[in-house]
Length: 333
Image (cartoon, rainbow, N blue to C red):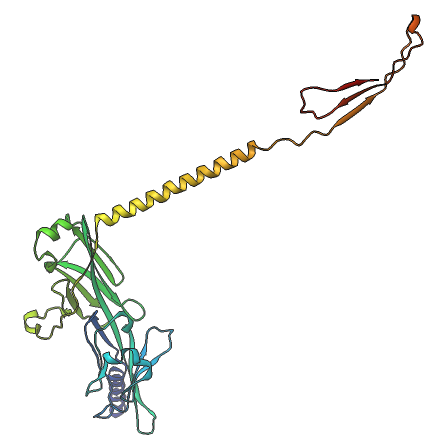
């Protein structure tokens, strides 16, 4: 009985270990412009040239998968970004200068010499952090958002001097949603306080593995894991592009208002012209020429006394022509 129970326990532990090794997903989150290294897990055989490894990419769950690396060589499907792709000695896929087009699911698949698939696929999910800023004459707004494969699996918030900014802060306004967060403050703070932007960090937490990363707005560098002293990892940080601040000047607003004003005036003029044309068209409508009415009235004979007793009044014809005339023509016979 004891031996039978021990066998069951051993089988359970082996199965659990197999699921842990074979079924674990890997999540990699980097900042835009950084370099990403995607590990090929579940390696069965030692690979010297990685000529039995194929990397497959999928941008979404409903999209068609594309082979980027086929048996260790760059595929024809990856020509457009072949200069950014490479495979390391341990068969990891390296992507340089990551952009939003690189976000998705990457699968490392192994084959034997006969071309038969070996082992389980090793999926890696690549997400991208983007930090940008907008500046107007009155307000500066910093935005931080994460692009992921499928549903959002990250929480995002802004820190000021390593502290959370509450919603009731008198000088700052914050807002959060799935995979994004914004913070805004007066432009005067940005202009009057040198290095003010350096006091802001975007904190990104991966819900799947609990990893927390901190991303400075400036100086711009790769995001670092929370709790790691930046001075110890400064040699590993890769400088990316300059921080993006999109300026919206007052002149731009004035020009836009001017264009809108001109369009409204033109609209009013057009309505006025159409109204005048309609009124004039209605005023010029005159009734059709009246039909000539010819009334013939035969007066009955009248008997008169005296010498004219036998005189009979001739037929009297009255013609009404052109009712618009100011007179009527009467002709007696």
